[in-house]
Image (cartoon, rainbow, N blue to C red):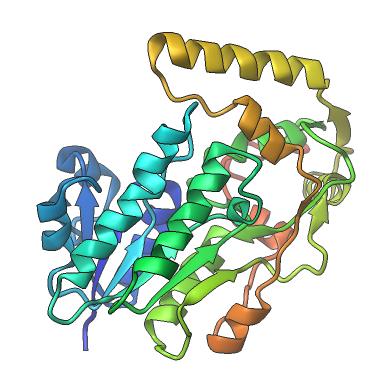
Length: 319
């Protein structure tokens, strides 16, 4: 039977990849879109668009009505104040949950959180992601749900990590924190596959789960540089970025945000996340309940990601 899957954040990097995989699996996909004209350019024609936002109760009910499951990818990743993050990452989860609870037969919910939620004291973003999880834990009554905490996600369509990999292809790796910090990574197609595995099974208990690419103890900066070295046939040097440079840039961003009201990415709070020494996680609990295993560690994932290899041993972007 064809499942109807409602999705938020469908036009984002991760959301677009999940939409494609859902369509390939034969699902009917219904996406919330603040601006349908823009969404129609970014998404396949077969995606049904529902105009609205996370703050619109009526449109959220239209989104989830008759759906078998909801995949919640929308989230705020930029901002200078707690309110900017909470409006989307906390209140948005609550509004969506209420719309689902109002249905006669509520759909299941998979909500994308973040590994940053493990350390809510580091930043407004991390705190908002933890509070979004708490909304589900404390307020879900009739909805079966899981929240996934992915680590750094990369792959086709990514714009956040792409500049870093492009720099490495040219022979240098700017390191914003401690060179020996460790972190897990995840290829976007493995994340999308985990979503499909969840849709195909109802055995997983409600709760919060982490997932990674299966590399024990994750990566450090040198191991990432070594991976790029192996692909590009050129040495990649680690170049620590002086702390004072990042501190000044983050403070200027925060000042500009207060003056002109824009939502910056680099803030003092974001620097605390970047400088945290341990962002390692594993997929053991998730794998115990789902028929899912990651297929891509970093080398395979980078080889499947176009657009970063310009400068690699004479290769052009996309080679």
